[in-house]
Image (cartoon, rainbow, N blue to C red; front, side, top):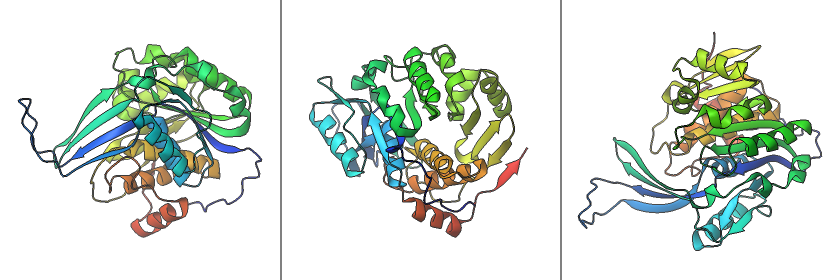
Length: 328
């Protein structure tokens, strides 16, 4: 496992610029029964936490020690104000977000022990984000651009995202993107224009197979590589992850930990992997770091509650054992 690199030699103001969905997760844990006849049942707990892939990435990356800037839409309502304060508390530069009177995007997550989760989504502010919201001068100040929550950003997805990614690469910025579920069912036709401008594409297997039209990880990777993506990282849940580039291919295992809530595990993996990239780690060690971040998150309730500092995460890896790398 690579050692932490303390100094990168760059004079950039930010390590990462995160663009995408910023929403509130309303987490209801201890759900036992759902009825729609005015029946009230006691929950174990109801929490309001940061959510949305891009906002999760920003908070996770900041907690891992990166200098992070957010670009997205936040409501002037009480939920938007609360999320802004949480971002500032995490050490994120929130000064470049756009404020709007549209209600903040929200996700209600019902957690039933041993039976999984149910999601109820309100898009709100996420539908308004557009390429014109992004101050392109920020690309001169960051080392890596991460776009999260693609498919929920109806005003930004596709050509808007491709424009920002193209601008980033022209300025020497590392580019990466993650996706969520496409509620419109269009999948590949929305984001194909983005592939040639991506250094890293990090979808979950559930989304990747919908986009590529196959469940075989190697065929999925072939699909994205042939379309222009430079490095493909597929999150496989309990099966770990799969990496493929023109020069390299491997699978990374998982850490054996108890699962309390898997919300945000994929975002944590992405944040850990990209932190490894910024630290100059090998791709296998990037995957191991991402795996460790996900393992920390799933032991707590909420997408960010379990994330730790980079030093603490590396110590966790030494304690639990480094996940196996299998070279294909």
